[in-house]
Amino acid sequence: MDSLNKLYKNILGIVFIGCLILVFSYNIIVPQRKFSESENRVLQQKPKFSLSKLLKGKYTSDYEKYVADQFPFRDFWIGVKSTSEKLIGKKDNNGVYLGKDDYLFQMFNKPSEESLKSRIESINTFSSKNKEINKYFMLIPNSIKVLEDKLPNFASPEDQKVYIDKVKNLLPSDIKFVDVYSSLKNKSDEYIYYRTDHHWTTKGAYYAYRTLGEAMNLSPKNEENFNITKATDSFYGSMYSKSGFRNLKPDDIYLYLPKEEENLKVFYSDKNETFNSLYTMDNISKKDKYTVFFDGNHPLVKISTGLDNGKKLLILKDSYANSFVPFLTEHFSEIYMIDLRFYNEDLSTLIQDNSIDNVLILYNVNTFFEDNSINNIKF
Image (cartoon, rainbow, N blue to C red; front, side):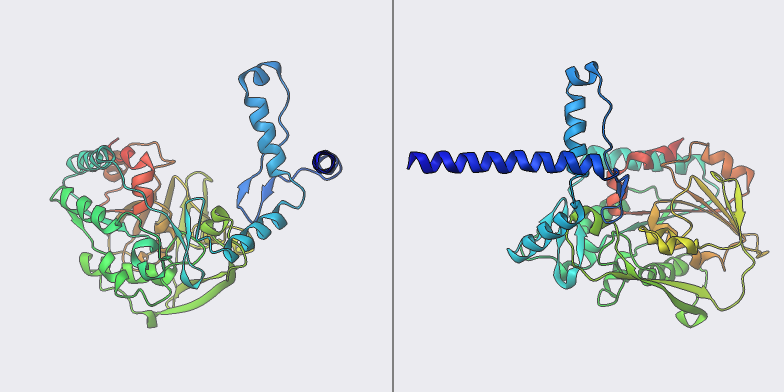
């Protein structure tokens, strides 16, 4: 028995050493990968050695990440792990639930009262500085709330609707809260959220647009006024990348293109360039195909629509707005999109200098509570 145990340990030792040699040789022969398309993230590169980093433990930590990220056939093994976990019935990974019909759901955690209070105070400060303009607020539920029937049976996330209602009740009276939860819940049997991504689909954004249109007295357009075009049927989104779950059906991305010709000018402040389209069609060939809408997120995007109605709208937003704003171009002469994660200028000055008369604050629930940049609204 002792000899068998010794032999077993020797075999394990040889296999372990062999694996180390294989990984070491692979990383010498094969060029380092800088980016993982399937995970949609930058991979750890081989760290440069320094004594100070070694003593602080950073070199060892970075080297472990490097070995993990550059492991031979990493994507293949991730797929094997995902398939194995699905076979044994695992339904969550890395903060993502695997639900029915291959829907992936970003988990929602209870925000602290302090977090809620700070956000409301920041919004209140902004409102008090800009009393003369019309102000609207849309807090968009994520799929984890609207598509609850598709969650795995054991899932018991915090109820987003509770916190949507808290925000609604705490907002200043001069900000009109626009309830899109009801609009989306009534359409939950339709394709209003991506299966593999954390965003709503263009159809989901369309239903929210109709709700906002009614709140703003805009006379929203019907679907018949658009040429609805499928831009791609091979979109794997952020939840697919984050979760590690594989062998799922990809998503479709649709564009709602107005049948009437528009004369648009779209200015990107960080690029200092102007384009004549809301869409970056080249991005359909990239991993993050959702960036077909406005080429992703930017500090400031100004849209001149060619309308002469004098109505101007400022949108303080996260990425949910990117597929939503195209519906508004037939209602305003100018639209300013501000992403507070990247914008550092004074908002009141922007409003006054451009005679903006309407402001829409648009966030999805997860981003609103997880990203502190909303607090920048008060500056």
